Image 1: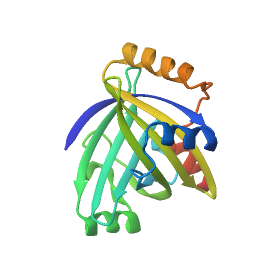
Image 2: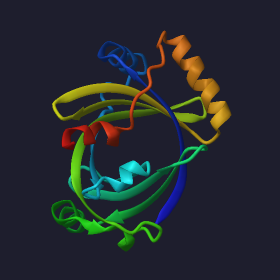
Image 3: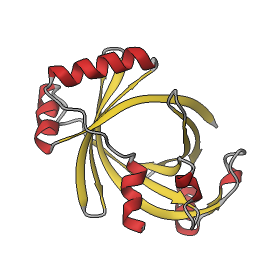
Image 4: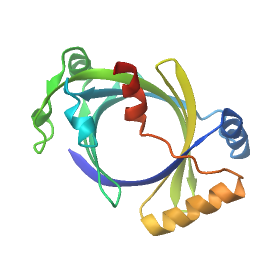
Length: 183
C-alpha cells in the first residue's frame, strides 16, 4: 500500500475554455481515459464522512483501489494496486474495506462510475490537469492543479486563473457528482 497527501485546487470551466487551454498548451493529442468506479455502503456512510472509495481503471489492465479522506491540508490517500480479475470481482460483488485499509471497516458495493478524459502537464512546480468528465448523461469540465505546498500552490493557481480570464467556480468532488446518479 502507498500513502500520500494530495493538495489540489480546482474550478469548473466551460467547454470553450477547456478547448482553448488544450490548444494553448498543445495537449489535444495527449488525452487519456480513466474510469473511476465509486463504492459506498448502502447507507452512504463513507460519503457522509467525506471519505471517497474508488477503483480507478486505466485501460483494460491497470486497476487501483484508493481511499481518500479530507483534511485541512488536503486529501490523505491510500492506494493498493489490483489485478484485473480481483478488481472486476470487487466491482461486481462488493468487498470489505478492512481487507485493504485497516482503519475503515465497512462492506461496500459499487454505486456509480465516472469516465474522466484527462490530460496533464507540468506547470510552475506542480501538475495541471484538464478534465472532461462524463457521468449520469452529463458532461462537465474542470481544471485541477496539484502541488506539494498549499500556500504556494494557491498563489500559482489564482495567478493562472487571472492570466486566462477564468472566474473560479466551486466544483463538487468527482465522486459526489457521480453519486448523484444513484440517489
